Length: 264
Image 1 (cartoon, rainbow, N blue to C red):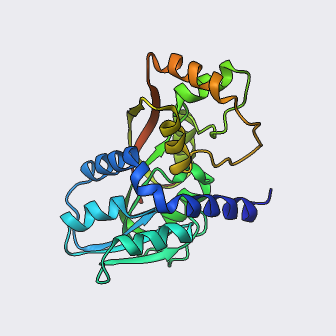
Image 2 (image 1 turned 90 degrees about the horizontal axis):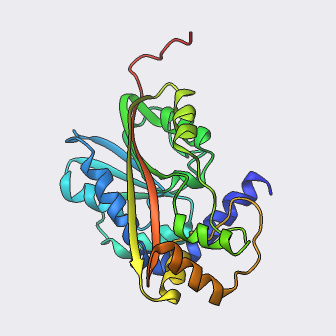
């Protein structure tokens, strides 16, 4: 599949998920809150939220910062349409449809960039290069992204059944750190969090995975899973009479230096 076709597939999948996304995205809202809490007091300027979805991060920022110009970018037209319905007509956000790997924005136009649980769907090296490009010198990006180990219980259940999980394999922390090191961005380190939620109803847990677009694959195809057997082994992997969905999340703070670093 070509990169263009892949981006279209991802955008279409999240557009389909958009009408119910806000209801299912409880862990995304928790991650957004943690992301905003790690940010210092922001001064007047422009902030771009990449993969804004229905606007969880932007909502927190709008409540806390009245003098910040907000830009919400998403690949999925359906997500942006849902965001516009959620926000009032006099919303302070400028909505932009675009690709994180090729931002339709000018160089050095943003004071801050945020991205919450979106960049795992991208080529991280391309996305970071674009973030570096649009940040002003001295500007900072605050990012959280899924890491390897996310959806552990569900993936373990699939493997126990001899099936490939329909959920993507995400980058390891070491791979993310190596990718950052290839840029000019200066990292303040990575904070790791595991965010989990539990459902006591099998169909609700599956509906949650579909509702957040977790079954959107970046590569390969999967065969249908045997539902009854999956139900039993997912419960076993979750440690009891419930179905656990867990995210392993890396929280990053990356600053574009005022002057480029020299390469040894």
